[in-house]
Image (cartoon, rainbow, N blue to C red; front, side, top):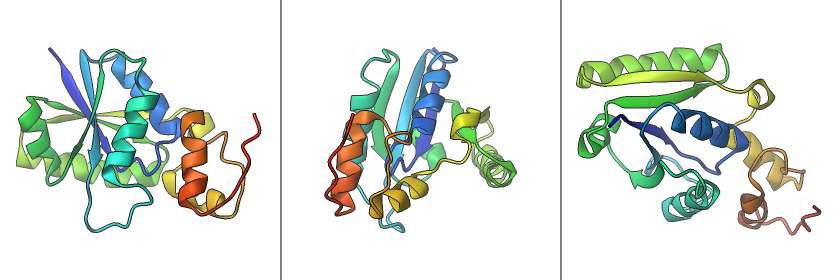
Length: 165
């Protein structure tokens, strides 16, 4: 069984993340979405909130599981008996960083390989930080995040916004 891990902060999950999840799930037998618990960041959502949002938006993808982890990615992969890391690339700057991380992971464990997926062009500008910034000022984030996440983002940002569908 080919198991892959798609790691990230997902704070919040975006349509770009969901696109990578859907496409990755077609490539492997089992896809673990690994929500990083990074103590050096001040996330908008708690790890449990991010895990629950991801479970909700991926519930219809049968081979996707969502779980949190902390520490080294290679250790998380070992726990899961996974050998593949999935990463999305939006721009050249992403590639430089992701290549460095991929090479580091490979040095830490030479059985780990990384698959890079180009982000769908319609999401190439999108990041969780863009979503947070637009939401903080009451901007429309409906094209950026899954519908189930919209009101939660506004609430966390302290914005009282009526969602118009």
